[in-house]
Figure 1 (cartoon, rainbow, N blue to C red):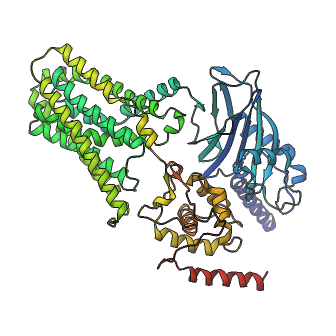
Figure 2 (cartoon, rainbow, N blue to C red):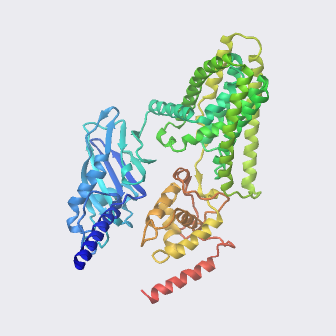
Length: 608
């Protein structure tokens, strides 16, 4: 009897533990990175997709006794995984015409250290011809699934639209997709989750309509912008004052919106949260002014000043969406601004009659005070909470050098330009507030609206991408990166691997995101992807330092949009092919690094 109870207890424990093992074996990864190429041709569209195999579920891959993938029997299972998780989760259209379902043409399992997917040509050759060696001794969860898909077309695709649905691969799925044109040029996109339909090469009207919708959605979805408009017009609900205030606000946020989108803003980490604080502060100020008594003669000035701040806030919505503008950057910027204005006009058309009806039933002054007080209370909480975010961002006083002097000169020039715009608006406002027909005021507003969306192609042409010569990391990050590199990477890599012509020939002219993506996926060689996000940032900074790119006051950020805006630029050593020399730094001693490197080299030699 005792033995039977003991066996029953053991059976219950086994039954309890077995499901846990199954759940752990099929646990959804926290973050999955997908890399893809799309290459339209005359009679077909090719797609190359790479996903981590630990994201593949519902496929029982054959394994050996040590849980390693049985490569000799894995081919049909890899094909099933490619069909289930890649091909079936993608739809393609040519304009409005649906294309056929993607067919799996080739599939392979690849090692984490395999870099064939760094370019379209190498990836195509590898997936089609380079199978994984049968002697590979790794669990399938440590490998990568690479798939070649094809969609046959009767005529060349003119307006390719794709809809990837890979969000189920992980808790968070980030896709980096590269469009390869028939002439060899590439355009890169990055998005999280399921982005819906992505038009890879939009016409100008497609881009314009898309960004009009983005502008309207951002305006209507931003409660802080709506409350600002409410406070702006609450005491003045007549046509003439509203024309001037709305015009001043429109001109101001159009200037800063376009300037921010074209890169004429500080890249420091504290700037974006500071803008959010100032937006909340603008609502508080407007509400308090309404309580104390606002004057129409100066309300347009307040609208213009705070409109500059709100323009930076509007630009935050463009950070990840401008990549879908294709070759129509200026058109998309203007369309976004038009969308904001259309939404703002719609809000005013609804808000003003409602306010008139409400304030007609109660004492007007009391109603304005009560509404403004409620808005000020809510905005004050926003301001304090956002200020806490600003205080959490490290801030260091800038050193007075040539770069700071140039920045101050640019700020002074911007202030002069804005002063001129405000002076022009002041003259127009004086004429507007004198008795004049409504038709004249409407014509003037239309003229200002056309002026505010004047094409800025010349300004766009002068905009140059930021490079790593401008100091995109700090010396402290490079020092930390050296320590991480020596501790985790030096056993398999040497600094010569990432320095000199070997570095410049591969990375010169490319986006810094490509280098960071390579480091975060390939290092350390024994366990790729095992370091933290901060450690990969530090190692990237260290590699930049090795190649003579100077540190600065700006910290290297892991944000993809920021990394894509920076180009790797290091011309030192390219002419004669000699390795780059790192300048001596008190916190970055080459002698100290050399001793560490030599000791590790001796250790590998004595104990192979």
